[in-house]
Amino acid sequence: MPRHYKYRIDASGTLQAQRAAWERRPLLRLLYRDWFRRMERELSAVPGPTVELGAGIGAFKEFRPETVATDALPSPWADAVVDAEELPYDDGRVANLVMVDVFHHVPRPGRFLREAARALAPGGRVVMVEPYCSPVSTPLYRRFHQERTDLSADPFGGDALSSDEPFEGNQALPTLVFWRGLERYRAAHPELEVKHRERLALLAYPLSGGFSRRPLVPPRVGRALLAAERGLAFAAPLMAFRCLVTLQRRR
Image (cartoon, rainbow, N blue to C red; front, side, top):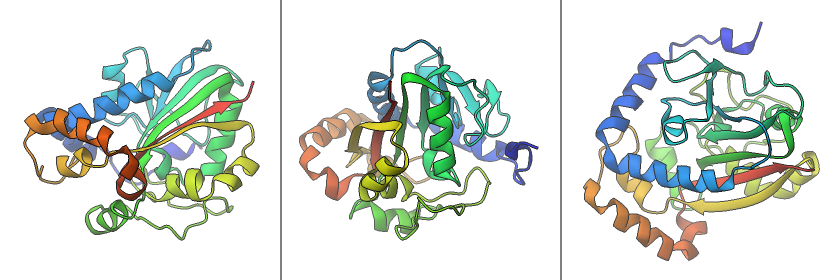
């Protein structure tokens, strides 16, 4: 039985709350759409569909309607139910796999990465935006976010890093794999080359309140905050809350 039929929770309430926050928070929408534009620039042009894993409230598909939106559970915003560790696509048929705050929820990241390498066409890409654990963001994630932030975990071991429940995970996972463990990643997954790494979200994201916290600034300052972040790019290793990572299937 596929793993997505064995989840114990009903995610509909969480998704509805996130959708409501999305619709009433213009700063949040501005921020995510800036990330979506960055992701779109990273997409491969090889033949095949662009598939979003963990589509959630459907925000990326709204931004790029030709995307195939999938999730681990049925929802009003998912075109199909797909398990990231058991992709239902033939070898070499997918142009892009898109993930927004999904990789750090995958219990067995090595299994997903092997599946991605199998399903992607040569030159196809995985493009993801994920949490990044900087000296500034790590204590704040641990204090204010419900998900675990464990920088001592071993993402390259054989054990599951979290349960199969869709909202559990380890926010430190992208940092551990693509920064602290980059050489181990390259040795374990040579077929998926790291084409791009970028640390971002220094100011606007924490001040926006995200989906669940009270915003600390009015929406009208959003564009000024994004401009300020570009000027503070040198401070990203110290201050970043998010990262953009692009992996490419070797030709």
